[in-house]
Picture 1 (cartoon, rainbow, N blue to C red):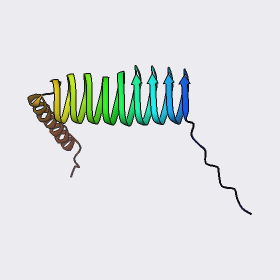
Picture 2: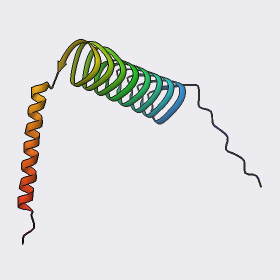
Picture 3: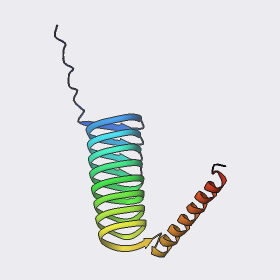
Length: 173
């Protein structure tokens, strides 16, 4: 007896979401406003006043949104909070913990770690900045002497804790 092969389901071409909470969305074009999305996979995605967990998109734009992880070729993120973003081309204005891109451009950059081949911004405030070429005013939260002092103090404290643990918990003969 022949078992029928499962039909291949086609993903919808356009999905418009408003004021919903969904676990997963997969389509060619996704537009969402005032929504919460667990996982978003789309060719083109636009979020407005929304939150998303994992976003995978060729072209992605978000405005006034909260995002956990974004991976895309081209991203435009305005007035949003992002935990981590990875893109070939990134334009953002907001706050992010980790931004990794080939080229990054923005007006105000507030990041913990920013990595890019070419970075241009009017004002960059970051903890760690790694780039070949940077254009703009840079304010490093941690400068060289402060980083060195933190490493020495951290190493000394760790050494003292390990020494105290060894003295207190060594086997008795």
